[in-house]
Figure (cartoon, rainbow, N blue to C red):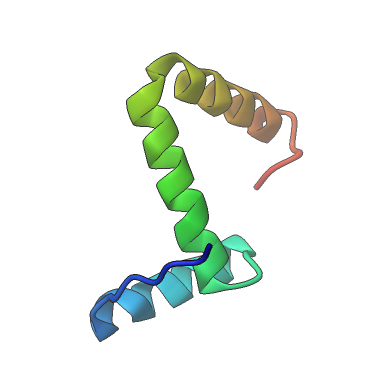
Length: 65
């Protein structure tokens, strides 16, 4: 079941810019990912720390920019 959220136009423009720069297929996908990350962080700080550490390691190895 899909729901919608209204954002002001300035915020939506920022979302579009960041989504494009980060390589997301759509601004909606970017927003969904951000919400999922925030909910995970609030539910389990350890899980977020582990994901961030994995990302740092992948960046260090050159797999991520």
